[in-house]
Image (cartoon, rainbow, N blue to C red; front, side, top):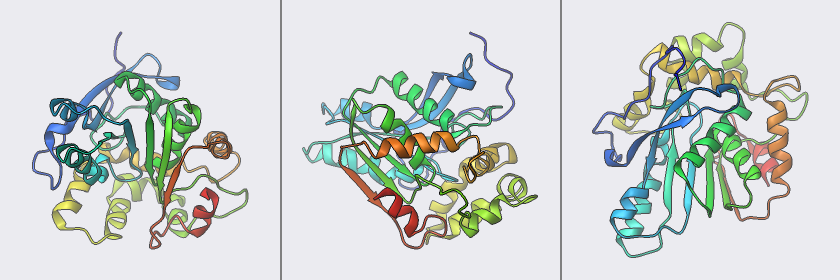
Length: 285
C-alpha cells in the first residue's frame, strides 16, 4: 500500500527528559486510515503501560483509553500512567493505560486531511482495533477529547465499562453563542494567526494553569513550528457552533447516545475553565 504525499511533520517519539514522563512507555503505532483517510497509513504516538504491566507479570483489569484535548497531548495523562504502574508494583489491581496523541497533535503524524469529529472518532476506533484492546474499556476525555472519547463509547457499548470526562462539552444549543474565548479564537482573521501562525492560543491556554516552567515547556514541545501547530487550528475550526457545521451531526449522535448509556460515569469540571462552564456540566449530568 503506497503512502500519500508527505505534506507535514511525521510522527516521532518525544524528547527525553520531560518531567514525569517515562520514555520507555512511548510507542509509535502504524494504523490504516479510515473514512476520508482510507488508503493511507497513519502513525500515532501513544503512551502505553501494557508492556510494562506484562513485564511485571500483571494482568490488567481492563484498559483506560485517554484522549487529550486542544492544545495538549498525551503528556496530560502522565500521572495516570504512573499511578497505573504504582498500583501494579504495590500488588494491587491495575488498569492498562493507553493515552493517545490524536492525529495532527502531539507527536503523532501531521497529514493533509482536515479532521472532523466523526473522522476523529473513527480514527480512535481504528487505533483501538490495531492495538487489539479487548474489553473492559474505560474512556477518559478532556476538553475536545471528550466528544471524541464519548463518541467512541456510545458506538462500542459491548466493551464499555465506564466513561470519564473532564471539562468538556457534549451539546451546543442552536442559537447559543460560543464562550468568549472561543469567539475570539474563531473570529475572522484570528483563527489561523492565533492558533497556527503564532503561539498565541497555545500561550494563553498554558498560562491558565500554575505550571512549573519545565512542565509548561513539555506541553509546548510538540508545537514548535507552524507546520506542527496546524492541528491546533484544525481543532478550533471544527467546533460545531452552528447547525450547518460539518461536525454538528456527529455531536448530536454522540449526545443522543449518551442518554442511553448505563455504565458508571465520572464527570469532573474545574471551575476556572474559561470555555467550559456550568451549562456544559449540566448537559453532561
